[in-house]
Image (cartoon, rainbow, N blue to C red):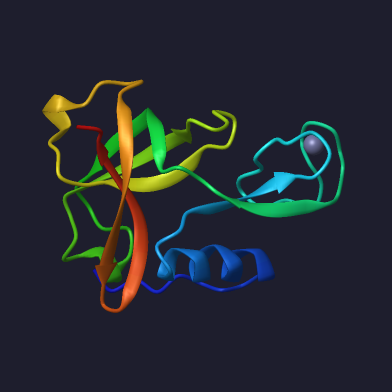
Amino acid sequence: MVYRPMLVSEAAQHFWEACQNRRLEMPQCANCGRLCWYPQPVCPNCWHDRFGWVELSGRARLYSYTVVHRAFDSNFTDAVPYLSAIVEPVEDDRARLVSRLVDCSPDSLVIGADLALTFTEEDGIVYPFFSPAR
Ligand SMILES: [Zn+2]
């Protein structure tokens, strides 16, 4: 896969820089502690506007997934089929992250299953993917 993350905001840049150092980080509300993903100007829980970045454990649960058979972008042509998923970090299941599932087949997946973060480097970029927890 040759896909370059778009660093269109300071928040996206922080997220991807953390991934390159093999850390999964999310913004956390300085007032109520809620993880806020995607990055937003105010907390959706308490409307506070100050955040700090926190490193997550990498443990998550499978909220939903789909098998992508047709590339929506020519950069993904070599990657199909692949598993696209929405995962919930165990630290806060309201902060759902879109990622990919690796090292598994769709037949073995169960909604709510425990997942583990696995960093995958492709073309010099480290991506935060997930696989079933062992
Ligand atoms: Zn808050």
